[in-house]
Image: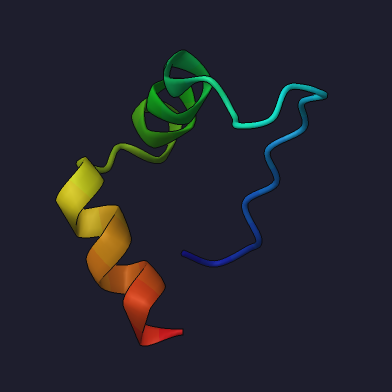
Length: 40
């Protein structure tokens, strides 16, 4: 990932469909995202 991922929502916790939409935009699978996230 070259830049920060920002998830804007007033709902807590963030709905799953929003997370899935972001992952689709990044062209990543859930597991791949968490692998990269754990490295930072």
